[in-house]
Amino acid sequence: MDLSFTAEYEGFRQDVRAFLQARWIDRADRDVRAFRAEAIGRGYLYRAFPKRYGGGERPADVIENTVIVEEFARARAPGEVKGMGTQMLAPTLLDRGEEWQKERFIAPTLAGEISWCQGYSEPGAGSDLASLRTRGDLIDGEWVIEGQKVWTSFAKTADYMFALVRTEPDAPKHEGLSYLLIDMKQPGIDIRPLKQITGEQEFNEVFLSGVRTPADWIVGQRGQGWEVSRTLLRHERNMLGGSERLAKLLDSLVKLARRRTRNGAPAIRDPMVRDRLAALSAKAEVQKLSAYTQLTRELKGVRDPMLPLLNKLAVSEFAGEVAALAMEIIESDALMMPGEDRRGDEKWTMQYMNSLAAGIAGGTSNIQRNIIAERGLGLPR
Ligand SMILES: Cc1cc2nc3c(=O)[nH]c(=O)nc-3n(C[C@H](O)[C@H](O)[C@H](O)COP(=O)(O)OP(=O)(O)OC[C@H]3O[C@@H](n4cnc5c(N)ncnc54)[C@H](O)[C@@H]3O)c2cc1C
Image 1 (tube, rainbow, N blue to C red):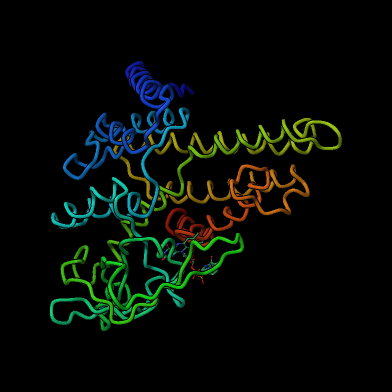
Image 2: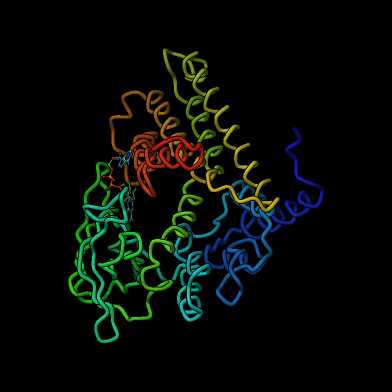
């Protein structure tokens, strides 16, 4: 099997590498914002977005995209801003939004000037999301929203929320939802942080009491919220399933195993550690091949709905396995919480705890397995 790219793509790689060398690696005065603007101008970031919405506007080319991601990671240069706004809302607006919504929201979102949170989950609606009960009624040209969201990441700092709200109470549950955009500064929004096991407060409960949003801050039509949210989840699973992180994670683990000792010798010489490192590196290779399979299928115009699900599942489990081995290598240091700078080896404890969350966010691993089994393999419910 020949996994090398063609000479044309290797030429493209050299262009990207030269740009990164000159504009990031060799710069003493690094300015992230200016660098990103330049990278967008060169068409290296936000390539699917037209220039008028602040994007790089390039024809779809998954191999060029892969080369860019690989080279930016190699140079440790800032790539696209990661977040709910850039990776989930902006692509959804591009697919499904009204022209005015694209013009108003996409460019400032990509530039990092405005941020978003996702208002989906509720106390009685997580895996069974379509059961959600937060109500939206159209009164005097505005949606009036009443209800509660939970696990809302970054709600405290977000400027806006994209939310699923029940606007058609008499319709079947999947057809009764609408997809609304809400300004987080509106009166009636009460945000209560939830403290996590890591000590962080990323999640929040969000109570909405008579919160108003204009009638046209709806994406898609009334009752189409479920469909719109499915577009978004595809983006979310792509975002969570990216395989490029694996090699970096494994590399950090190998460095740790070289540096730390176990039974008086470098941990990397311990047979148990070697065995598990070998298994993990084989898994990372398989995951890379799976990503290449996806690339090849996309190039042939075949859309495989199962691969993003498989990737999300594999990547979230892999991160946990890497962190679990790291914790065994650092032994009792794993009992400490990391310091402010997160530079000590105890950071692996945090990595482990965060890896547990990856198997829940964006649809739990159990639910991913259900979908793969039922829709992918045709097994009975
Ligand atoms: C890091 C993180 C960030 C998040 N950020 C957000 C956010 O910003 N906005 C937002 O709206 N939500 C967010 N969530 C919430 C997340 O989407 C939900 O936690 C998730 O969908 C699961 O819902 P639940 O917590 O209600 O669990 P439940 O649905 O109650 O599930 C509990 C357990 O039962 C299992 N289960 C449920 N149904 C089935 C079934 N049919 N078959 C087999 N097993 C089943 C699940 O796998 C799980 O193990 C976040 C979660 C995490 C961990």
